[in-house]
Image 1: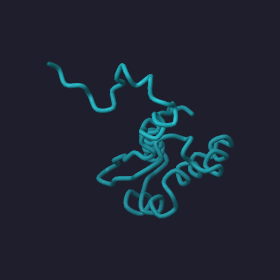
Image 2 (image 1 turned 180 degrees about the vertical axis):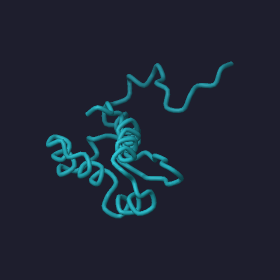
Image 3 (image 1 turned 120 degrees about the horizontal axis):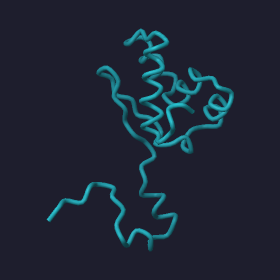
Length: 104
């Protein structure tokens, strides 16, 4: 019998109360970038309003800093010494991990 993937919807899932389904969803995910691991919110819904505002204003660096937090963002810059191309690639990894369209 085939193995059911972790997190796969089960037929009875639709019968769970919305609050229970939401509570079972992860609020954080981990992304890997060039040997570093970063724990980030699972979705933009889990970010603070400053981060949302940065996205709305097209401020990609401020948005990624908001997602990572100041300490992790500083570590990302210090260890990777990213140029703009590197940053854009990392931002895409972060966006995909959060379920967003990388073009957003």
